[in-house]
Length: 201
View 1 (cartoon, rainbow, N blue to C red):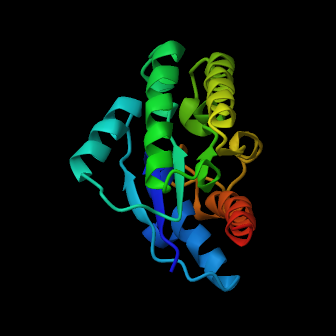
View 2: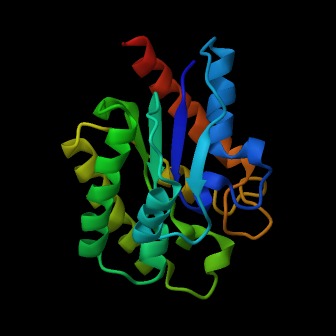
């Protein structure tokens, strides 16, 4: 049986959607349809977490087992709180190194998702959307560079969140977080990457 560890923040737990509709659980459901025997995902994520808070939570969970594959999606709250990109880079490297350890040291079995652009959502009404978008782009550029340097896999989902940010049905009731419909897009892309990687063993 394959095992899956999902690390992140509100976008990983699926704030405001039923747990079976978040992207980790939808990914598992899609993999099972492809005849992969995958256990329910182990999720370490909480709304509002920054990189250092996720790192602290990982230490507190004291995980000793390894996993067939790992996802990591973190950084939006660093940007939201106005933390420096340099700080993000430093702490993201440490998280990615830890994720690779959890994936039995196999870097290609770690999948990093890009950070959604909350500035495109109704929640950002009255904010400087252009600045938020540029800062998110900066974070994602760093995220992508570090991910590729570590030989992990990078999944771009930011553009989808921008395209669907104002379309009814793609957001949860808070006008900020994705709905199950948006998570389905991520899950389909992720499941495709995971399936190809697992078959390649």
